[in-house]
Image (tube, rainbow, N blue to C red; front, side, top):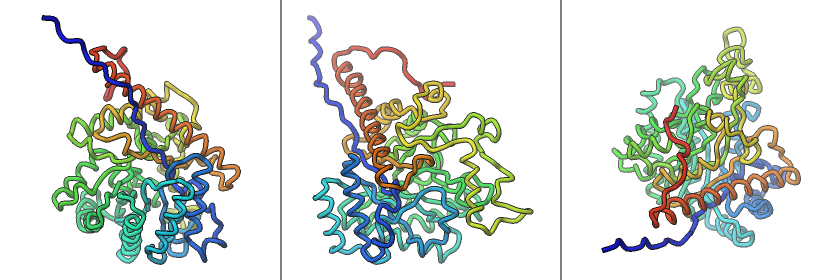
Amino acid sequence: MSAPEPQPRQFRPRPMRLSILTAALQELTPRARREADPDLAIEEWLQFAHEIGSPNIELSAALHPTESEVPAAALLDPVANTLDLRRPFDAQRAARVRRAMQATRVGLSDLAYFDNMLAPDAAVRQRKHALMLRVFDAAVQLGTDAVTGFVGRNPALAMDANLVMFEEVFVPLLQEAKARGLTFRVEQCPMPGWNISDSFHNNIAYAPGPWIALHRICEQHGVGEQFRIHYDPSHAILMGQDSRAVFQYLKDKGYDFLIGGFHVKGQVIDARGLAAWGYGGQTLQRGDWHGGTPSSDPAEQQNAWKKQTVFCEHELPGTARHDPLAYLQNRSVDWLDHQLAARELLRLDPEKTFLVVEHEYPRARIQDRARLGPILAGSLAFTRAIDEAAAAMYALQHEVLAAQGIPVQGTGREAFRS
């Protein structure tokens, strides 16, 4: 008796959902206009997102410049308090933002507040935690189920001691998130220039090993479901990793569920800078210390970021040259393989997963709406196209061909291959 003919499966690619972090244009609405009317900044960003072709925004919150302990001159990573929470985000404010979302047909992927939740100074830490709780409340008011941010690090403590501190001060934040029905997605940037110490890892949630250790602590306290990763491939490149290997490691360890969203931001390694300093970056004579003591000048403190910037530069998706050798050396993000590997190795639903474009390419960080608009529009279009290509390849190879017993051709990129 002959075997039954394999039944064809219909071709249905599943693209991910596109969004953009509003820190891309920090002062879209000038301070002179928004101080008296803070939510005007959100309304105008929603309109801007519509103009550049982003169907969603990741709404950025931050301490107001008058409240932050870090002077603006010392900041390299852009932050933006597009969502101004000096006063609570009440139902009236939420209704106004919802009307703007309906008018522009732009949605909300999540809220974002990137700060050090393990700050060593108790008063500073309390101020940051208080803002995070207001972000949680705003997320509920706006109907999103996720907030993205950092864990951080207490630089005065060793890493194992930071695990203890995480359990003591960060787990309560996750308990507050759980009470509100929220997930906290941790971005994994090691934040090497966050302070002028010689530490490269100033955010303890920087790689899969630490993620698993932190998640196990969360599980012990009943908040494992609240702890997820907002994966950013630029940080993997920064540390010599590649996304396929990272995803494979998570799958092998049974933690392929941990990644819940993506920042779409690349990193381009400068081979000369790498030859000079290695992956630890510039370790001395940076300009943030003088005569054996730390500089008191905030502008000079920014030189701590040379731990990163001497050997690499952030990429806005689509702005880096196509470089197959760099992909194989893990010196630039192979976006197509990144999107394929996510589908092949992670336990996620692509149609419910957000790709959030994050703009930190220094030479293209033009804070002018007319000039920046076409740049962001092009990057969003690139991100959409590359994900649609990956969705098509995955559906064709893993569903249509697989249903008919037809093998996929070739070998492809392999995790852990030297």
